[in-house]
Length: 159
Image: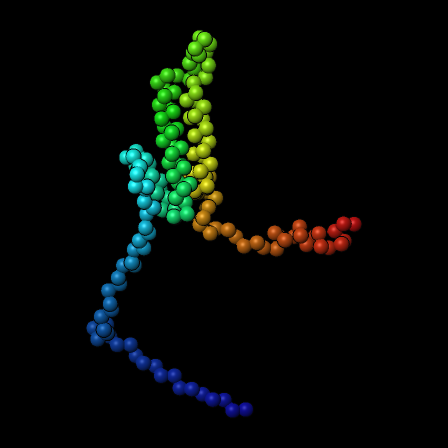
């Protein structure tokens, strides 16, 4: 049995003063994410609310435009209804003098439900952020995920 030996060349490192200067480490290039622009024909308060949502959720893309528009509408309508409820009160008198619920209160409650649903869907709510929605944190299904299915396939599981 013949063994082939190889000679390893050991080159001594040059002293620091003779080494070529290392290139300065450049900062990583900043990734520029185009922000979702507000519709052109919107009011100033609409644009301000839109920009606030886009700044809070840079993950929003062009596909989220319609849902974000509905969310901004709901927020502005909720704000207006809440202002009317504060001014008029939760109860008003009907034309016959009977106390009844302020119609703005129903609008305020409906818009609050819409805001909660849409902000959750867009990943803006606390619950959506804690779930890690849209961040790829889904773990691959392991053997435990298929154990119930395996028991169904095993005829002894039914005895």
